[in-house]
Image 1 (cartoon, protein in one colour):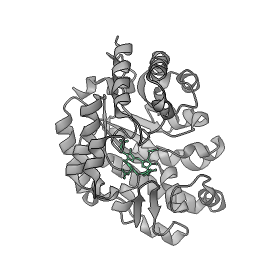
Image 2 (cartoon, protein in one colour; image 1 turned 120 degrees about the horizontal axis):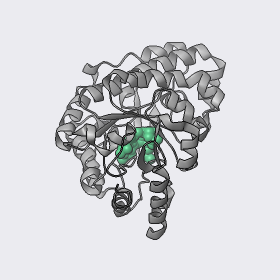
Image 3 (cartoon, protein in one colour; image 1 turned 90 degrees about the vertical axis):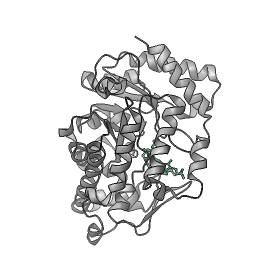
Image 4 (tube, protein in one colour; image 1 turned 90 degrees about the horizontal axis):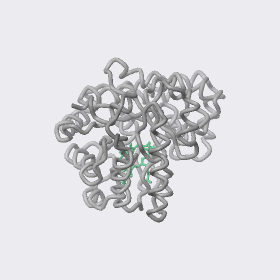
Length: 342
Ligand code: CP3
């Protein structure tokens, strides 16, 4: 039963047989079998092809024996599905043909309806059957992170245009995030209705914001996206990079689990969050390249810190780097399981 899986138990702050573990970007370029399968197929096309999505999602589950699968897709897939002209450029990330700039651009962001993504429903349905007792995590990008790609036109380090819009035309910002929250929420809902057992909202770049700006301009829109699946009873994970100062606000947006990156210890995260949230994290991905004894010692420390949390899902502080030796990930799963067995 999925309800008894370590991932769902930890997310809902119930006792677990062992600490569950999965890795952000566990499906991807660190796996030779992924690189082989993706040969000759663009990222967006791969995300819309159920045979590929199913196989790529399953690859890390078979190989590493992780406690959850993460649906193979991308945060910009729902934007492309409603008609936004964009591409995912290898080594760069999402790039927009026409950045979002004016009120007229809102017309390019209609609601996402399930008939626009029948392939997503098909992929999730097939995966849930194949995965059996292993939960599938569905996901979406949060409004702020999606807005940053739309407004900047691609990846950014400074979010200058995004912040200029947020502060310079709060009404347009509000309208943009309202559209994006509806699209994200609908994308989460499609996945859960097809059988996903949990969801993660990726606000990857929210760490660029102050608490004041997050509260005034972002939090309620993430709450709308997470709220779209509130009635479906699945645990909701809320993650961002460099969000140590925002953890409580991200929890309050409607999460059961708050993702913690490597800049804040799990002990400090729990002190900031209190007893109402489980935590997910937080091995520094850069450590994956360190000698194994160093990695193993750090993994054990994180498992021990996690025992003091109301619930703990082991993960990295961010995604698996492409050049990671996949055997290190397999060994981490073994150590987390052995070291945490109750
Ligand atoms: O295993 C998993 O985690 C599932 C798959 C997944 C992908 N993207 C696949 C992908 C998930 C959860 C995402 C979400 C995503 N996409 C986020 C949020 C997560 C995070 O990293 O914070 C963001 C910010 C994006 C936008 C994006 N898409 C970036 C920054 C990139 C990397 C560009 C690059 O090549 O370095 C992508 C492309 C992407 N998404 C790849 C994968 C496997 C690489 C494309 C390829 O293999 O050609």
